[in-house]
Length: 143
Ligand SMILES: CC(C)(COP(=O)(O)OP(=O)(O)OC[C@H]1O[C@@H](n2cnc3c(N)ncnc32)[C@H](O)[C@@H]1OP(=O)(O)O)[C@@H](O)C(=O)NCCC(=O)NCCS
Image (cartoon, protein in one colour):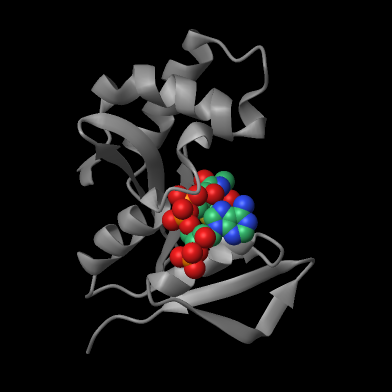
C-alpha cells in the first residue's frame, strides 16, 4: 500500500471513485461537475484527500478535515476492493503518520466493517455521544 496526497492529476480516478462510492454524485454526474468538485476539495484549506494504491492502482480515498478540535477522518474503498484488508492497511498506515494529531470519525453503528477498521487503527468510541445511529470515535495524539 502506498499513499499520496490527491492532486488534479487524480481527477480521472476520483471521477470513477466518486460515482462508485458517493450517492451524492448521482448517476448523471458529469466530468464538468466533477472538476468543479475536485477544485473545491483541493482548494479547501481545511481538507486533504489521500489516495491509497496497491501496485500503483488506486483502491481507496481518505479525507482529513480540520474541525478545530481534531482531524475528522473518512475513508471509502473502491467497491470491488472491499473486504480484502486494504481499508485497514490504508487507515493504519495513514493514521500512523499522524501521531501528533487528534483524529476523529463519525461511523454508522451498523457499519461493522467500518467499526472494525477504526478499532484496528486505534480509535475508540465515545460511548456517551451517539445520535441517530451515528457513533463518534476518536484517536488521541501521542503525548
Ligand atoms: C468501511 C470500509 C472503508 C472498510 O474497508 P475494507 O477494505 O472493506 O475493510 P477491511 O477488508 O480492511 O476489513 C476491516 C474489517 O471489517 C471486516 N469486514 C469487512 N467487510 C465487512 C462486512 N461487509 N461486514 C462485516 N465486517 C466486514 C473485516 O473482516 C475486517 O475485520 P477483521 O480484521 O476483524 O477480520 C469499506 O467497506 C468502505 O469503503 N465502505 C463504504 C464507505 C464507508 O462506509 N466508510 C466508513 C465511514 S467513514
